[in-house]
Length: 234
Ligand SMILES: N[C@@H](CCC(=O)N[C@@H](CS)C(=O)NCC(=O)O)C(=O)O
Figure 1 (cartoon, rainbow, N blue to C red):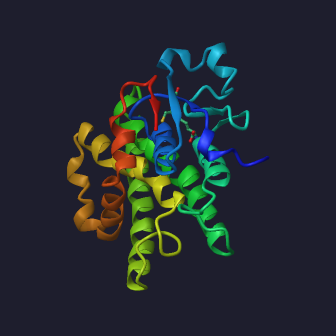
Figure 2 (figure 1 turned 90 degrees about the vertical axis):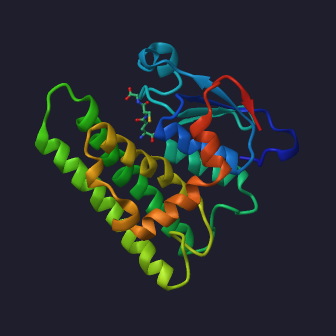
């Protein structure tokens, strides 16, 4: 695949819903890489209809179509991997050398398989499951805390070595992949009346510092504030 001409890019179409963690991950990377994109809002009830399933057979957001390369993709981690490989030509958010490149993949897979789904199940059982299932709620809240603990311990060890990011000495796409689900924990515990179980500043100080550094970025602010979904951005 040839590298698209950065000076003449057509907007990338992004199927999404506002303020949802997986689409917002992609918005953050589009913003960080200053790529033009158009939001294509999908109503909840349209996600499993033929029109959208022609884009994503899994019937979930996000999905993208990039007219510059003619690729259609779904799964947020695969989309981010594509955007980085195609457009981060100066490697601002990535490393290409071993072992850093593989460690980035390791953390990205951990986010996609170990953080997102577990935090998502915690939110589901706390807020949406039709029957109250205390053991399922406790299991996923405990897993959420365990995953945050893994990140906090790793970042604490890194801080003692003089680095504050997951890999190498700069913020990468792997760090940014965690920020939206991290940010959802306080909200879903609060909505479930369990805010007493979440004091990250005290319990997970390295995680908290890292999370706040990413939440302060304009890419995160934009991803969380976008509501007018058909606009062209950048
Ligand atoms: N593994 C997928 C998960 C996508 C996902 O669950 N998206 C949510 C929004 S954050 C969704 O579309 N939910 C609607 C539904 O479950 O029907 C990814 O990372 O892209």
